[in-house]
Length: 329
Image 1 (tube, rainbow, N blue to C red):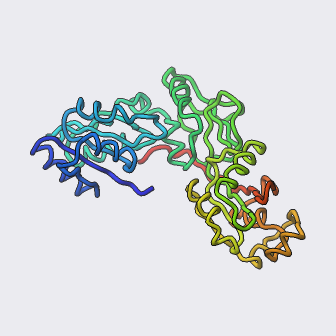
Image 2 (tube, rainbow, N blue to C red):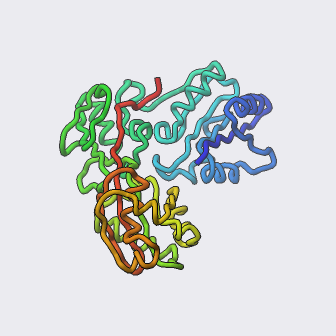
Image 3 (cartoon, rainbow, N blue to C red):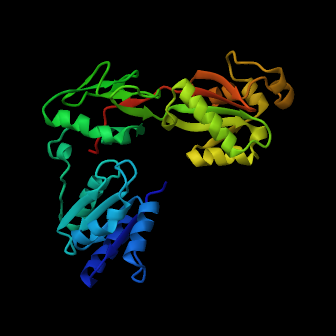
């Protein structure tokens, strides 16, 4: 989703500042005729950040009906009409409100009022690290457990099957059975799981398959194979499926780019794959899902053909490229 910042103000002086910020940030001002409640609701649905120029109480009352979770909420900032104080109200880390507040303060010559404890003490922020590394947070409610240990001067353990480049942050160590688990396999521990987006879903399907059929088999596939769906970054299939409305809708619903390959391209993928005479006679190559996953990923097959009701899935994984960068600068 592209970055979208929306702004509102409640006085003439405040509107002047908001318009200046909108120009600097590429943001959009609220039409004065639009009710504040409707603007706020729309902002929560469509924007990455909402900036209120005016009283903090107005901002709090406006957003209260829409607050869901730190994993879903957009950034919300409140700026006084003089631009002296810039306050991140909601989603300081995952939504980027703290970073945006610092940027806005630099524009106004004011001060960002940061209250996030790990930021105040300069400690490792696991949610910022996940965001910076492009990993999905599977249990955001467990972030507080990790931060609490750091704030008590205790070390946290990160379990990760891949090397992580750079210097390990203060009070962070690598080990097994950690406080934080980096994996594309579903977590069955009390650890906070981070899922790196390194998986490619290969798809084979019969003609005219419905989106709902694909979704049903996909959910079963992930459950039986212990795969975190959030770790999937793309999907792939044979070019003969380019016009399958159900397949296109299924991938669009998950936000996956979908790559298509010709039978010749799939046949050229090196390796041994699950062969089907029926599939070869139908589309010209003996396997679609495994070969497509391997071709698009450039990695290795981690789950071989899973077939049900005219739908076949396979999964390939590329190597995760991680480092310890977790903040700007």
